Image (cartoon, rainbow, N blue to C red; front, side, top):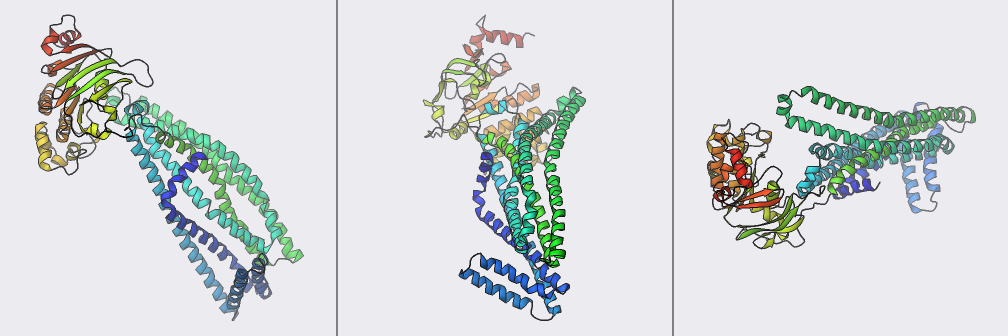
Length: 618
């Protein structure tokens, strides 16, 4: 229940709406009872049981008075009740009948109005709470480090914020609708039943202990199964995400049948577990109902004797008593499912709270330093790094000083640590040991938002959003003028092809920019970096996946972007870094060579010369 109490804490901002919903629940339950009670005078009038009219009304009133004799509130209540009786039962039988019918109609009208208002305010609380939980989870995801996303499946995270949160939503109404309105309904009808015959009421409640036992047993089973169900849904979401984003590879390798079989196996497993849960969940209601009918049959027999033999109960009272008891059955059945729904939602909530409880490893210190510009140099001092789940060093004792305005290229075989080295600059990761200084300040001490504003990043895997060309270029920039947008686009060699698109700068590029070629996507990402105008640029193999023509255009755009900026370049094609101020050669996480292009070629046994000769051996 600790998890569920945490879910309920999200309701605090909606206390007013919740209070209104509870108030309307009380009024609904009260009017529901009144509408049934009014059947007694109606039946008495219809069947001419005139003597039964006055005593019944008096019995209800007297019961209230006796519980608090001498209390002035009871006296006032008694006077009101007597006045109401006097009004209701005065006049001809036709007039009495008309008054009773009008009161029943009015009671049902109010009951339904209150029911509607209660449902509306509860929906406001439910949806507001779920919106906040979903928003908080999404916002927290952006605070988590890159290492978190390396260890989590994308589909699993999507499933938690969508499917699991929906399961949590169902439990909110279970508590505040079923746990408020239904108990009140039961209480009011129980009071009506007791006022008619306490012995008959006691006899009818024999089923309650059995029902409570069944509910508790089923709830424990459902909690365990619900957690398994959410995990299987996460697997389905992951498979969907992977196959849709990788549809070209699936088709190219003719793996449609394989992916279909894998997906069907997952949905079949999900189907079996859903059925298993349905068997357990749905058994509570019929068992409760069956036990109720057993007791109901015995109750009808016993009540019939009180009417026909003992003459201690008249027929109209017995009919209303039966109505009151059977009106209690639906809310009792609803309550029997509340515990089950709470257990299911608690299992789902635990998966959501796993995200929220994950502490971001990379965050601002308590008093971060604010910076607005890069003035002097960047230094790597004895920097080493390994991932949390692996003790093998990716970087080992890196020492490097980069002056402002320099172009630094990182070269090395795959896995040498090139990308990791530049990922430390914007603090996608933090060094395991050592530190990185920017203008003499440890970047861990700099406000994270300020640090990243100083940097622009263009990667081999271009990230574009399913929005317009304009919004992708101006990403992160508010109120960007059209002149600046077009200037950045021209500098990135993108303006001409954008004009040829169906809607120019308003063209939607598709998910990940699938409507554009690789070179076009890369030029848009460079235009985005140009518009941001950062003093530090990072290029992570930005041209390695392009054809020759696109590479020329992109390389021209990169050279414009590098002008008067401090630039870090990870190069796969060595032809693109000949003019770099320094080339850093990495091997197994260590710097093994450092110099200019021509200098490194003179080192006969150097790794750089071997890499160069491999690329240009023809």
